[in-house]
Amino acid sequence: MAQNIQISGVVKDVVGDPLIGVSVLVKGGTKGTSTDYNGFYTISAPADGTLVFSYVGMDTQEVKIGGSKKLDVTMTENGNYIDEVVVIGYGTVKKRDLTGSVSSVKSDDLNLAVAPSVAHALQGKAAGLVISQNSAQPGGGLDIRVRGEGSINGSKTPLYVVDGFPITELEQPSTTNERMVAGTQSVLNFINPADIESIEVLKDASATAIYGSRAANGVVLITTKRGKEGRTVVSYSGSYSIQQYTDNYDVYNLKEWMNAMNTATWDLWMYENNVYPYGNRTLQEAIDSPKNGVAYKLSFTDKQIAAAGEGTDWLDLITRNGSVQQHNVSVQGGSKNTNFMMSLNYYDNRGIIENSGMKRYSAKINVDQVINKYFKTGVKITASRIANDNTQLGAEEYEKSGMIRAAVQMNPNIPAQDEDGNYPVNPQLPTQPNPASLLLNTDKGLMDRILANAYVTYEPIKDLVFKFSMGMDRAHQSRKTYMPKETLFWRSFRRYRYD
Image 1 (cartoon, rainbow, N blue to C red):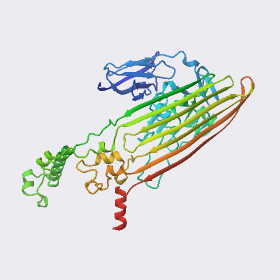
Image 2: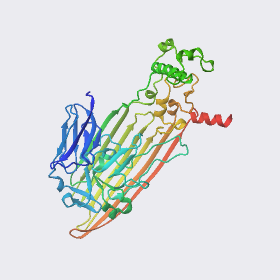
Image 3: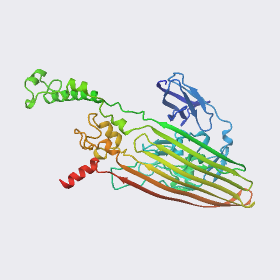
Image 4: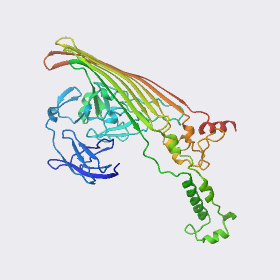
């Protein structure tokens, strides 16, 4: 596999003006970035790879890297772009007639095969939309910003509208045990990405005229697929992929750690005895007259180091090969007066951290019915169940420490479990939990959600349409946690209570 190199460059249009927000992706991968206000970008990619440059209204370009560290690109306009139809707050309009600031992304432009939600697949796809993940849990939450940070203290989250109905952002319920942190979840996890037809992002102030103050941070409009006149089509799509933990910390094995401990204790002894460069004494003076009469003693002899094994690989203990699989079945069709679309989805993400995962079961039905030349009606229903297996990934210290942090700070000479079945802690950091004990925790979240809306339109004369719509966004959430007695917190609690 070719080595990654750092590539940079400037993206301009045919006139020579820099293009802001151009999506730059590594072909066949997930790495991506976007250009800044000067059209400048930088990205790490394989030397023999290909970069894909895409921008709204421009032809997508694929440029082979060929080992070059500087790639400047000139993009040309897509002549068909201005005739595309986009969804706005009150309906649809051709882009040539559009006056507001809108970014449009079609489902064909998104990699939906492994994404837990359409929000994850949107990264780097829409100009002015900045997306970053804020939780490492499977299906973890995203910080989505339209044109940057709009407020210091207020909300910065855009409004999400699915098939014309604004939805509520939901998180897993909190618990009284602050050591069990579930992280955040993406607001769009409950929607099957394969059901998405298009996504429009309203980025200017005109969106508030439609949706009010809720749209102050922008609006993300999501339109799902609908039935089409013609024969009934049954479709299936599925995928399975493996995930590996490759961002490993370079930690010592047992022999390396023993040598490092010898070096550290020697430096500490020299410091305490004021030996140069820590003081003005010579080494011989310190050896002849050590502080408090305590001579230096090696923590580990050469014989002990030679006989040592590999020790405990804490990161290997808490990680595994993850996997992502999903299966989609849809039925789509219709006649002159009735169009329908139905779909089923199963998504399963087995996380790379032990005990972490997310499963989604969803069903959707869209029906549009022409009653007569004046009236038309329709209904759209999405039902989903999301089951989360949360693992302790918090950034706190000591007994609230996340599993990865605890694994990195744990000494390799400590066993995961002793002969008595206990989970020993680091004597140098006794308030840090044993990572193996954190694997005993149970933290399961469940959310059942139904999003339903119906509409009736009345068109008495051409191009004059009255529309009445109503909807419901209902969810039931639960979360069950269990921390067994073997964990550091409960051992400390019992000791505090009974000693």
